[in-house]
Image (cartoon, rainbow, N blue to C red; front, top):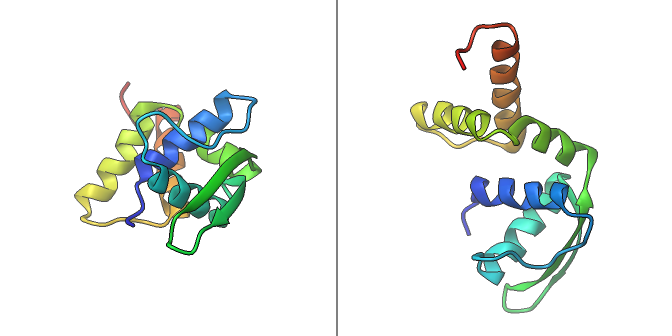
Length: 119
């Protein structure tokens, strides 16, 4: 399954906005939710309970955001920053590791703070 950065952002935002653990999201296929929670847990964005099944699917519960996950959400809670970072990658014709994506978002925020970005 290809990594869906929009889904990763949605899961992270939900983890920030709720005090409850969750094991599904509306309009997200269970397999996609499981695989992305597993990826986020491996990347250190969230703490999750992940139980893989033999046929490649599994069950996953998001427990909480980690420090790194909080930084990710702080960087990309704004749809404008999220779009700017994604557009930069798309214009370069590439995908990127999560750490590079966060650095692009932080760079955008820094330039906006310094007045180098309109809006």
